[in-house]
Length: 365
Ligand SMILES: Nc1ncnc2c1ncn2[C@@H]1O[C@H](COP(=O)(O)OP(=O)(O)OP(=O)(O)O)[C@@H](O)[C@H]1O
Ligand SMILES: [Mg+2]
Image (cartoon, rainbow, N blue to C red; front, side):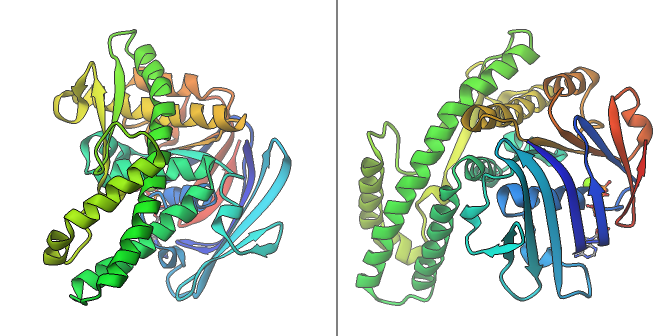
């Protein structure tokens, strides 16, 4: 998989830019606040349908403008493809495939795939469960686009049920309807995540093993509010139905849905110890790299081609050993790396260096 060009129009701090990408390593450099991460965000939107920084669609629109447009041309194993997204200040985004508007996110997710590495990713180990849920969900939706429809319906019903609970509306029938649907969707989300982690684990374990010369064994364990040892998706659904029934008064009292996959998490273990609690900073960094590289490896296994690797400002964060490891592992794949200092990239084999200043891009050879 390879991106050949990106066009942005009124996208964050870029007015109108066209950037071409080459095989192998592409370097984007420039001062702080130049717009480097914004460009990666514009690309990643096509992989996941949303920002990896958690920003809302309206925040992509350049200050003072009504809408932003971003478009990529890329090659995947089926040929060339062009996707566009128009993001509005006050309306839902519009998505285009080969210039024709399409109605569903799931019709374009999975066509272009990317793995993003950012310095924030240490939160995958150290941060709150939300970071880990976002990691799994963004990865799953690229390989199983229908997952995004399930997750958004879950979020919609969850919001409706929460509104009912918060406003203390006494409607047992409606609550039952919500709980029935939520249990069904929760079961699908949980089983997708379990399946994904089961496939990710051996890949991540192999990277961690390799990176530490066999000293560290990485494992993952999904923590579900519905318990453990599930037999089937129906089993998970029934457990949620029971939970919602038995905890109804507690949820009514708190005025919010207390149970469901929106509260789930997964634990990362190194040598059977919880990495969040016991691993050193360096071990945590390796674990994050292992998980992200594993995401790329799994994406290749599931779809038959590697995603594009987006490395946002991470080389300055890593020691030389880990830096070399990530560059060796992604060798031969398309990589887009950002950083402030051009010198920092010396020694990297790259045919494409892009300098960014105030959202404008120019090319160096
Ligand atoms: N909607 C917007 N309209 C205009 N400018 C915006 C918008 N959103 C963000 N910006 C600006 O874009 C600028 C560049 O942000 P970006 O995160 O891409 O910088 P960067 O080059 O990655 O910097 P750093 O090296 O510090 O990571 C910031 O100054 C930010 O204020
Ligand atoms: Mg940045």
